[in-house]
Length: 120
Image (cartoon, rainbow, N blue to C red; front, side, top):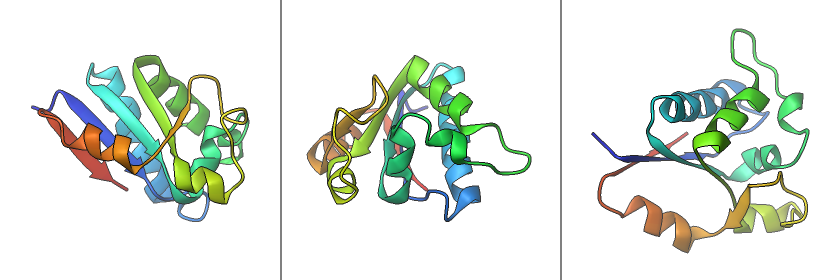
């Protein structure tokens, strides 16, 4: 079994089911004791900002703010550097504890031994 799970979310409000699936899997993994690293890319980068997750709604899905909180309590949340730059998001804008990092960090995380990567 993988010791760490790295999940990259590429969907935001425009694809709510795919987005919700990624956050749900990340939160369940965190609750199960799996080390988790959640990457917010593309339109999901907005969810790294305070209050933005509260704008997300999907019937029969857990609230996104609760899922993010669960992931952050047991792992890391990262906004993609290029995705942040394209949206004028800076380190001062993101939720406390969310980092901004780029492809080099993502690649180093997914290439480590015992890591499983998923992309949604």
